[in-house]
Amino acid sequence: MNRASWWVRAAMLAFVAILVFGCARPIDLPIDLMNSDSPDSELAALADSDAARRLLANLLARRSADARAPGAAASAHLTDLASSDPQLEGVTEPAARLPDQAFLKKLAGTTSMDFAALVFARALTTDSRSRIAQATFDRFLQEGPDRSVAALRQPGAFPYTVVFSPSWLYKSHPETGSDFARQRRLLDKLGIRNRMAESGESDSVEDNAAAIIRALRETGCDGGPVVLVSDSKSGAEAVKALAGLMPEEASCVVAWINIAGALRGTPLADSGLRIPVKWIARGIFWLSGWSWDGVESLETTHSRQRLETLRLAETITVLNIVAVPVSGSVGYQVLWGYHVLTSHGPNDGVVLLADTVWPGGINIVGLGADHLLGRWQDDAYILAMLRTLDATIRNHGPK
Image 1 (cartoon, rainbow, N blue to C red):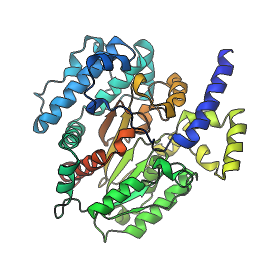
Image 2 (spheres, one colour):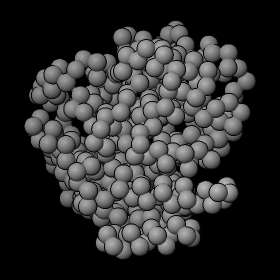
Image 3 (cartoon, rainbow, N blue to C red):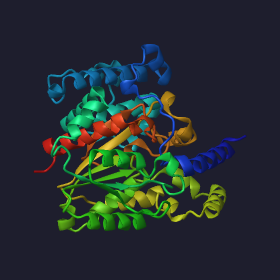
Image 4 (cartoon, rainbow, N blue to C red):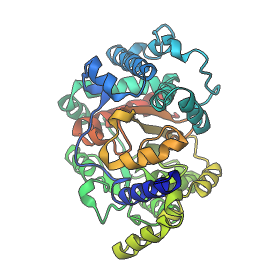
């Protein structure tokens, strides 16, 4: 099989697999590097090079130290272990901003894919706000769910209404958790107000953004400040919706949680729009009763042009939840997509890493997690994120 025919076959298999799993939640719970207590030998098996293994170990050590001493996480005196790796000498990241995908792709070519992904993970929490948020989340997670439940049940502990923007195929495949049902049940038990935006499960980004705007307008400010939560494809829909709000409407939204957002689309959609993959994919969509508009709206050129025009109100705090896997931690559901996307550089199995982040947001890294963020569906993770969100809004949000 020549290289061209292999690529077509790989793209076809990847795209068809992603139709069901790519923006949904998995049933199994893959490894979480931050909380696995993995021995060095296990960590060594996950990364693809000695340099990546060293950087991974250093990142885990730094996060563990930050979580134990959260007050010191933003201190300039705290040792940044990752910076001591000699492999990082000569690696010059773009100043005053995160590395872009072109930089990561080039770095992967000169070092290794995992090393480039971990350099991005390191950069995500370089700023003090992100490093504090990461340390706060890790500390709450280590404290356990019982303590988080007790904290969240205190009067006024979480004075927000949460609006969920569901992800790809949430009606056809609710068993995957793409409708946020587990999170909504947990919030109901805690007495936290929440609702779901009734968007189309395979509609275009533009149509679903209009549905999110309607949901936010219906929610209003009467139930307290609003937090919008999006996942994967709905990340692109959420940011377009937030940018489309009137100033008085936007003032009700205090935060947006962007989970592995396909903000700039995905090259997997580009693959699905090429013949012969398009013929097979459109047939699957027609038989399943799904709209093709959603795929077309995730085409990368269109998605990047769309994102360039969008601006958010300064009163909205953005939390980017970024999955950064290494090659040995990618789950089988997105493994085909991961390998197809490696020609573009580091990715999470569905989206290129640099394309998941809203610039200027506060970043929390799912180190070792792929696009599906499997373990993040545990109650302990959900509860830790709720507490981290509240702490971040109170400490770093606009006053």
